[in-house]
Length: 299
Image 1: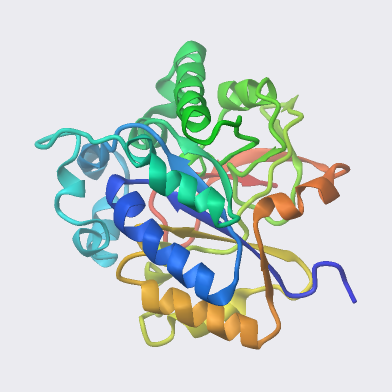
Image 2: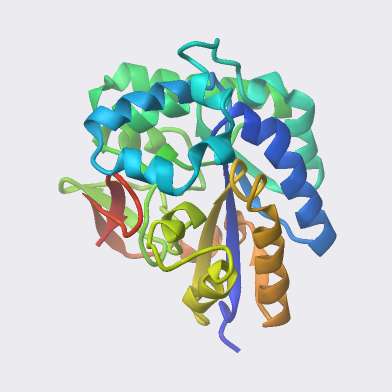
């Protein structure tokens, strides 16, 4: 039997205060029910989600995506005002007991961001010093809560650059998950090779599938399952705000159907050691179907 026969690596990104406080408990209950372990990547700093409004003017397709995916229902109106008309609450740093609960239930925890919105919208405008500060603040909060140093990171919105990859190489990580692609690899960006293993997401997330037009609530789960590869580790990224919110039933259905079909679920750190001799691949920015803006994609 092939080592990765029917394997799903479940990556859970937590972008907002609402996603952490309301979505994470829902996801933990679902995972507990099915005896599944996953990798949670948490945002620790301020929830500045309201600042996303400026993307209407600078990111093609952003407004249509917000309308198409029903953003107010996904994120809630308060979230869409944080950092503008409402103060930006801290996310995981403000909920240490819940953060510890994730670890106590046997899940991997990694760093997603300090200020998720800042990184997603302005990474290429940030200096090396500012990017390092973003890592340092989230790592410090992680250690204060959990008593250990994080060993994995996953960039917001699959955004990375020369500076962020360089800094990650200095952090002693087991791996990062900053990209989209097919299989784990060592990144080459603008001709420069980096030593931190990348485990790319290789399955579309719900928000992207909804953007395809022909996918709806009735056929979503069936279509998700049809995209899975039998002999590759399927890296599936979900969001606490989405699958822990209005798509919680679809998430449970996805797990039930894949378990019935013989799929096994693991956190990302379960496979990282097996890819120490992964190939080098170039990273470039490109578009994905159903998604506004660009993401880092391996060649």
